[in-house]
Amino acid sequence: MLATAADFALVLDQDGQVLDFAKGVEPAPEGLEHWPGQNFTSLLTKDSLTKADALLSAARAATPATRWSQLSHPQAEGEDLPVAYLAEGLPHARVLLLARSLAATAQLQQQLLDAQYALERDYWDRRQAASRYRVFFQHASEVALFVDAQTERVLEANEAALQWFDLSDAAATRRPIGAFFASGSQSTLQGLLARLRHQGEGQSQKALVAAHGQALGIVRGEVLQHSDGAVFLLWATPAAAVREHGNAADAPLAEAAAVLRDGLAVVDGEGRIQAANAAFLSLAELAQGALAEGQALDQWLGRTPVDVRVLLKNLRQHGVLTPYVTQFRGRYGATAEVEVSGAQLPGSGEPRFALTLRDLTHRSASAPALESDTPRTVDQLTELVGRVPLRDVIRESNDVIERLCIEAALQLTSGNRASAAEMLGLSRQSLYVKLRRYGLMERSEES
Image (cartoon, rainbow, N blue to C red; front, top):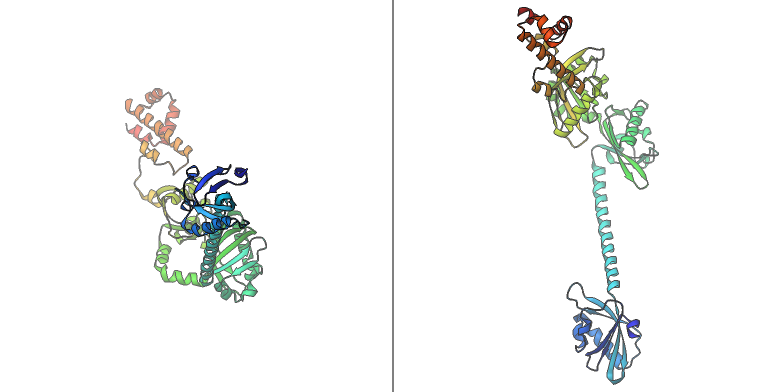
């Protein structure tokens, strides 16, 4: 009955020594079977001795036991074991102790305390992060706006934005973002917001003109996801500040790029042109740079659209692009062989790449005539990989093999075309066509 009523029970004599015990189904303290013969107080922690003396004295004085007293037993490993005791006096000054283990309760209490400490730490971390964000957001020199993605209304504007748009904080919030810009910039703004919805980030190369007439330079945007919806974060730099900084720091580079005879273009990660020099515009047959800005590079560069994608992939992976030859198409159909090289521009924003394009047309025309432009070795063929599509590499390989076989046949027959055609299994007419194709006609005639 005692084992069922409590987790375990003890009987003490008049001196406080343990005479007997009974265990229930719940785990008991370590070494309980060795407690008989030991003094009960020697089994407790120091901070429990005073409460144990009061508990036993009340039981021997026959005071009705109505309250449980919590005592602690030291354990060989881990924390002390808390136990709640209820004492009843027995004849001959003996004492009956009913015990309930509080280990599970103590564990729950510790978990509750740990959770409370974690919540407090998280709360203070969030407050410190919010303070840092507030200082950075308000003191940033760039114009910054938080815009609700669904309603397109401004949720918050920093100090630079309020000064730029000449508004107070109350006048700026909850207004449509379109109200901040002139009517001529609405399509550009909506295009930027559309890219943010579909791609998660984007920027506008074309300046956005504010409602009061002043222009903002490159406007960048990102999407922030929240539990109650998405928010657009728009950053922009006044165009005057962009020009002032560019004139101060990049004037020599800009002047050099403008007069270079090689084409120079700066593209974003998607291959869209951000800036181009006069030589590039001449190759593309464009009258002004505005016609190239924002356009895809692959409409001019590459034998196939795959060329530019491979080019950009190599730049992202390696940071530089070794020179290779490809085709460039002008706006009105003119084509040219160009040598392309490039590198990724440093910066923490979205990737940008600088590409140089050297026109090889004039160089090829002025260079001494070679026997043939067809590759003659395996090394020359493998160098074509990555520069031209696979089907072109295969066609070049067939041409190399065919030319080598014809040359070998002519050499074995001492230039006798009829014998060479018979050796190759070709008609004399077919052999003449191939000799003209590979520029071997004159050589065979000389032989």
